[in-house]
Length: 346
Length: 291
Image (cartoon, rainbow over all chains, first blue to last red; front, side):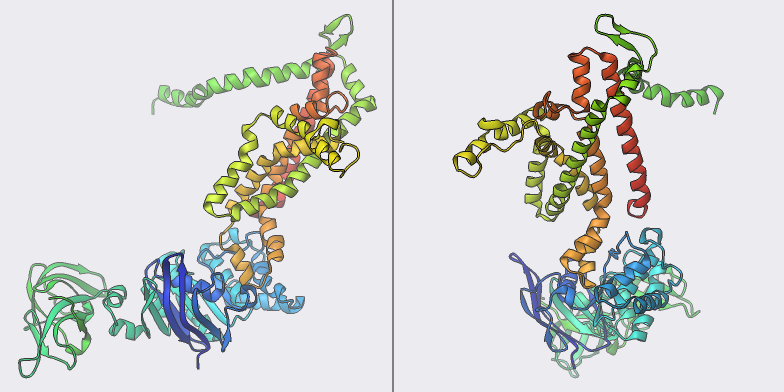
């Protein structure tokens, strides 16, 4: 049963359509990511849920009630902003207490809940610090505590980790996931970082130019991208031009010198997408030459020049000998590891 | 590095700032010191200025209640002007900051407009509108039967405060505006998402953050109003003197330069003390916002 429901939501600024026909139902306790490049409409969608923008069309419902009819101050959502938007003239504790004050929570209970919220984000003992005397990561935690202490029905995170350095970001990702699991708040994360979306979410909504490209679990969107955009945006991928020949028996899928029995469905020119880590070196398959070989510790990265254009191959560093630069190889993969879509033209 | 080069690089900052420093010393420090010295000289109707060291002028200022009244009026007018500009200027800056790009630049120009016109012209404008029976506004209101006698404006403290506030408004608006620029653009949304209404947002979130801007604007307006000359001279004239016009009269009409110098020095010292003192207080109080 849908807890938060977006039904054909749209947003236009003048003649420009920023979000178009956005439908999504979010289950209670689910962690959803809106993933896409900047300008894809993900933040606009989040702001419509938050109430800072009114949708031009469609409906947003929370537990069946129309959310757009409720003033943003009364929606009871917790929001963490990209810039954190902490109140610089208040201490960490005062920042966290603000939402409780607005709800007229009695002083004693307020103090207790503030203390607990700050402890939960690992900031016990920082109650009297002002935000400007805290590091980026600490400010981030205060912002999270401030959003969570009001026990929001939905937690909205607007690129919350993008201002942190790589190492801290990874730590915060793990922590964010643990906190969300523990308290079970329904969460929507807006991000342009595919790793962040994949490591945190139950489901990812991949967006491009105001439209939903795909909704699915991280595995689904990665393994079975619904469009060229999704496969390109989520990790590295190889696209090869291929053809399905239904005149042969059995029908054949051919890409350069690589071929396999064709699956049912498509016919004619197709694009074959295959992740670099699913390609192996074999005795048969696509002819290719290794252009560069890069050692990256736990894996090797090969850039190859194949008969179907440039290709990337990633091999685990499992101790076996790897081909050298300039060497001729054959690229091969299992048909079930690739995804396929019709190719226009040709 | 050789000794000569070291010496040269040590002297370079002095050499480079020398022209400006000489100008500063020549046109500010020396005349200032001479004014202070002048305030200790003697003066008589027939003997003129006598370069001796006496406390006569200072004693006169300290004991004659005329001067106390004058300084009290000066600071009362400056304080009221400051309050008026803060009460009108802060909301003005806030509204300006929320406007769309094109309107914002248009109204910014409107607000800064007064700075482009001479203080004398602006003050005379007020005199034309409200000056006695012939003032435009007074005439209109009287012929419409709204008022029976003209609104007293000329030679009143109210008139002086209104005219000064008009002159000083851009300084307050710009100062508050600068503080508003430093606000996180999402801060109001953050407060709103936590359940705060518009009044609470302004009172609890916006006000405390722009307070340093209001206060630094207040310092500028206060010191400029307390030492203003043109506006009090036109609105107040001889009938309603303030410290600046008093010093002017002592210099140019009574020709009692030493007494005028004492008044000017006292005004300067009082202003410096007030400005430096309140600045220190503000910086301590709002340390967290200034960081």
